[in-house]
Length: 333
Image (cartoon, rainbow, N blue to C red):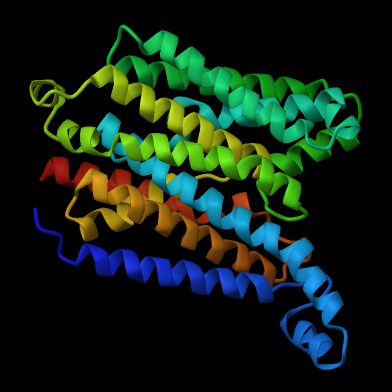
């Protein structure tokens, strides 16, 4: 199917949009100084202070919002292509809950207070263990086995996180866990970016390596196998790539949902429903959407800053319900 919009033009437009939003993210926000305050500092000989705010506060926040959004968008597109299910997202195979559980355990045990990077490291470890478990459970099964295993892992991780909250030694620890689970890129440092960035990039490479196989899978598993596609290798690439990239992102930002569900749906018609083309487009679209959401939580004053994961859920949940309603309407017609 020929895309209704030139693919290079679409990618160029999305790249330009990401660049524009990244620039706005660097200069917008209440963190010590807003937009006009930053320019006022530069105009009155306090450029060092302004650049320090942008380098130490805004840069990690902007970069993480962009990279995590790209990760969620690309992983969502890959999973929807592999599972051939338009309602799939990174949470469906349990990666995000497993990463969240690892981070919650770091908070619950006090490791995060002793070693600042223990929280993201435990989150990444949780995601990798989830990937190994899923590979073992789904090795002899098909797509249905993988989905059921993901549901089981997600339920178990959710139960264990609830148990940690229930048994939390003090209300301050419980509050810290709850705030982290809401998802945010506030107060993140360059260390978080250095830790998670390379792992997210590695995950992107693995997902990109599955692109041609995803195109063949759109014809069905039997047709793809007839075209020489190694389904086991494709499953490994998609699961491992999703686990590494989404796990690393979730480990430093907390739970941010629905980006991987919403973005591929919005962009799929623009790439002619071609899975391989949707990967890059969804990565850029996810980065743009999360950057826009992070800018919005900074400029909308509702007392305490609205958590990023809360905003994406408020937008994504109605969209998810609309997708279900539309699918049901199409089936009835």
